Amino acid sequence: MPSAFFTAGRPRAGLDTAAVHFRSLRSAPARERERSLSFTELLWELTYALENYIRLPRVELPGWDSGETIPDLPTDPQQAARALRARWDLGDGPIPHLVRLLESRGIVVAVLPYLNSDSRKLDGFSTARLPTRPVVVLNDERDDVYRHRYSCAHELGHLLLHGEAHPGDIEHERQANAFAAEFLTPSARLTGSLPTRVDFTALGRLQQTWGVSLDSLLVRSRELGLHTEAVSSRAWRRLKASRAQGLLPFTPVRGFPGEVPVLLQRAFEMAQRKGITVQRLAGDLCWPEDMVVRLLDTQDPRPALHLSEAPQLASATNERPYTDE
Image (tube, rainbow, N blue to C red; front, top):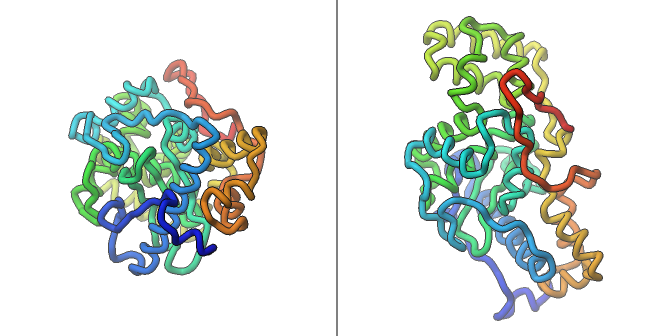
C-alpha cells in the first residue's frame, strides 16, 4: 500500500468480528475471518469514494440508522419477513432477482474475490455497523444459485432482526433461517402448491418458480405439516443419493445476472462519464490502482438489466419462472 494509506485523515472503516454476523466461528480459521473483515472494510471505502461522485440508491432497510439497526419490524422471523414484503411492496409471489432487489434498496452486496481452501469454508456474512450502508458479502463459489439466494435472504434477516451481532449464535441463526424461508417462499402462497406426497418432479417445477433449492422445499413441506418425520427422512435419503449419482448438478450463480452484484460497477461506469478515472479513485483512497480495478472487477462484466425492483407477479396461475431474464 502507498504510505499515504496509513496517514490520518483518510476516510476508513473499522470492523471487528463482534460487529459481523458470521454463521460460525469454527468453520473457518480466525485469519480467514480477519481477511474477510479487511475485504469488507475496503469495500466500504470504495463505496464511500464513489458516493462522492454518484448518488447511490437510498438505504430502505427498516430500522437502519447510519451504522446501527434498531429493529423496526416484528421480532418473530416469519412475521418480520411478511412485514418486509409488505413494506417493499413485493406481494406474496416469487422474487426473481434477490441480489438486485437488495442493491435497489441501497444495500451493498459483494462476492468474496479470493479463494483458497479456508475461504471456501466461509458462508455469507453481513454487517450493519459501517456508516452510510449495510453490507452483505456472499461466497458464490461454494453455492449454486439457489443456495446463493437463500444465503442472501439469511443475511437480510440478520440485518433486520439482530441489531447486535452475536457471531455463531444458534438462536440468531435459527431466526435468520426462518426469516429467509418465509421471505423467499411465503407459507400462505406456497402451501397450496406443495405436493402432499414427495414428488421430485413437482418440487423441481416449484424450485424453478420460486428460486429455492429442493432442500429448502423439503424443509418447508415438513414445517408446514405436509410430511411426517419419516417421510422427510426418506426424501432426504433419496435426494442425497441423487446428488451422489450426479443427477442434480449445481446451477452456477454466474448464469443468473440478477443474482450477481453490479451496484458498484454501475456507479463507476456513471462516474467515468463524469470524467472520474481509476487513477482518480486510487488517489482519493490512497490505494494502488490495481486494487481499485480488482474490487470493481469482482462484479460480473457482462451487460445486465437496468437496476430496478423485482417485478410484481400477477397471480398464482401466472407465475414467472425463475430464469436469468
